Amino acid sequence: MYPVTGPDRRKPCFSSKVAKFQFTCVNITGKGPKWGRLKTSWCSEVVKVSVPFTPEPRADIWWWCGDNRLLDKLPLNVTGTCALVSLLLPVSVYPTSAQELVERHSSVIPGQRKHRTKRDVTWQGQTDPTYIDATGVPRGVPDEYKLVDQVAAGFESALCWWCTINKNVDGINYIHFNVQRLGNWTQSGFEAVHGQLAATSLMAFQNRIALDMILAEKGGVCVI
Image 1: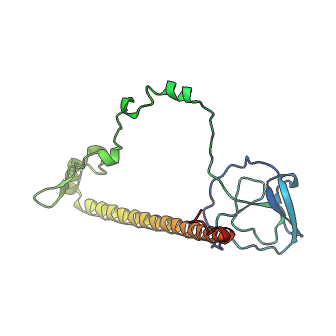
Image 2: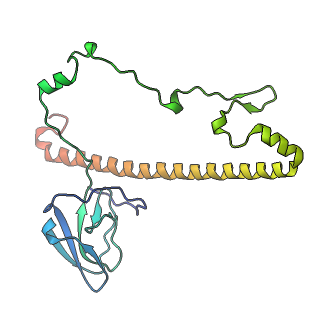
Image 3: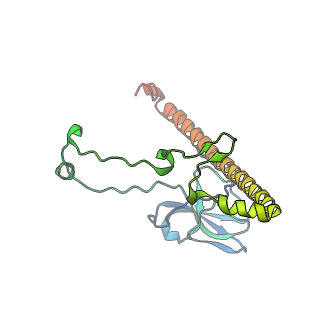
């Protein structure tokens, strides 16, 4: 149900405050450095193995050895007790009643509720002030977003024109470098999302096949 994946450079954030006695743990014995420090009282089942123990990384499954780190695979020749974990989204449940819901809202009828005016996000709702003038030069950049003042640059170009050329070249190179970095980060982000979605889609398809097999005598999932 959990397909094999490649090594993941970025591990997800998680909270180590979890319920005890809920994990399937692996006790690795050998002469290597002690890595796993998870107490066996937190495990519902402990499987004893010996080094070298090199499990393959799988989608949505992580190794937790008792500290604030998650591992997609264990280092070579380590010892100790580690647990297999699967992460869940944090959900908080607050008890409430129908009377409390009515008191918090002016009315249970949507048409009579007091609607709040939504504020536009700055970068989405703000009008673009820039434009191209008759000579083909971009104009209208707000002063707080300018890197160079036009007046100061004019005096500088008159007194030390070669300095202005060098500064412009450095500025162009700097912008080009950061655009390339942004493109690389964007590509890495899409690749990470693609890998996770592919593994999740495969797991959902496998779950559907398993349910169809279990409920075959009743006609499958669609009939139910």
